[in-house]
Image 1 (cartoon, rainbow, N blue to C red):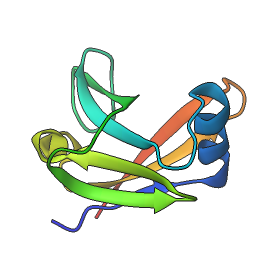
Image 2 (image 1 turned 90 degrees about the vertical axis):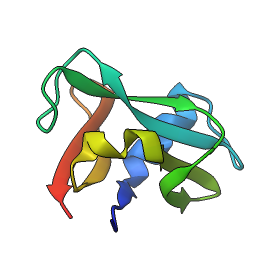
Image 3 (image 1 turned 120 degrees about the vertical axis):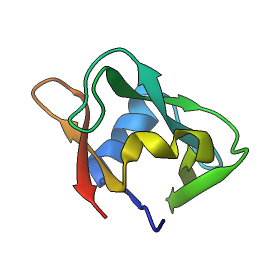
Length: 99
């Protein structure tokens, strides 16, 4: 699978300001039970500072690495992940597009 992660400049700034992410940090996106998403009923997307173990996809933006572990690949169901900011809510906004 050639899944990709896209991080907007606004999202990178959000990570830097809200999570104090700096160069060399690694951020994992993972499937979380509960909540809602347009691609998996009863699950939502979480993220945390973490160390890659078996990453299935990674992207480095200004020396910050974002990744998804192999065990969470099912959640994305063949979709790429686009991460941006919803400026009205001042929180991350996720969009999924079929790869």
